[in-house]
Each structure stands twice: as C-alpha cells, then as structure tokens.
Length: 78
Image (cartoon, rainbow, N blue to C red; front, side, top):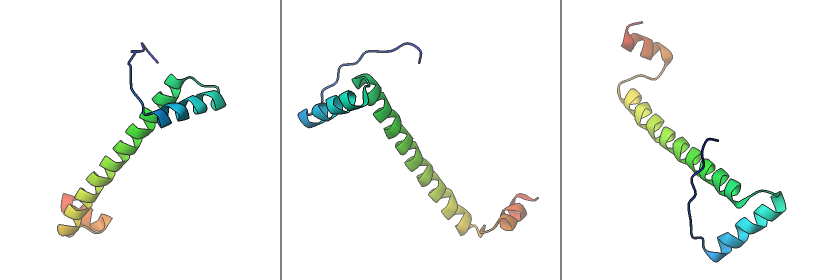
C-alpha cells in the first residue's frame, strides 16, 4: 500500500452509523471501508468518462461515414 496519509473527515450521523455497522459486521476497519468506497467511486467516475469519450468518437466516426471496420481501414489507408 505504501505510506498512509491520515485525514479527518466529517460524516452525517446516518453514514457514520452505517460505516460503524459495516465495520462491525465485516470485521474491517473504518479506514478500509472508506478506501474501498473511494476506489469504487473512482472506478465509476472513470467508466462514465470513458463512456462519454466513446460516445464522442462514435458520433464523429458516424458523421464521417465510418460504420464498419472496412470503412475505418479504407479511411486510414489499410
């Protein structure tokens, strides 16, 4: 994991209670639960960004008449 950096965060009471329950039920530290939540949020954010990029380039390809691999090969001179 490398070196850890301590942070102090504030949580609404309901989330604090929920994280304590998860910690107790799963036998994990609050820190590891927060780390997992942040990793999941990052993965979801990156997946969303990738979808936006794919949508952008798909539209550009369609507008350029590139609908198949054969169209793409023709366009790039293969």
